[in-house]
Figure 1 (cartoon, rainbow, N blue to C red):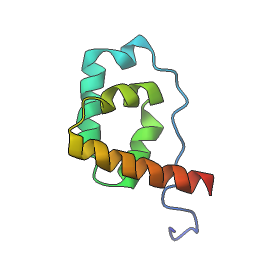
Figure 2: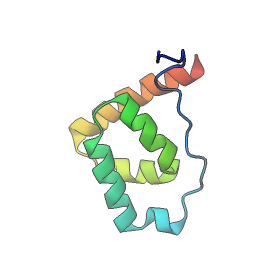
Figure 3: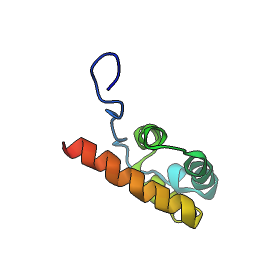
Length: 84
């Protein structure tokens, strides 16, 4: 909880549809870099608020196996908090 009494991971999910610009190789490569740099669930939550879901999914295929496992774990944590 933050000092204001809200959950630390009370973030929204980007509702944009992934346009061709989001799905081109340059954009996907940039999203891969962002995901590879991601170090915790809070950072992943920020990225989920910025990038369309389909673009994140396309980028996740290119992640290193270790980072993909972290992302899966963090997604479970984030989705669990959202359901609570």
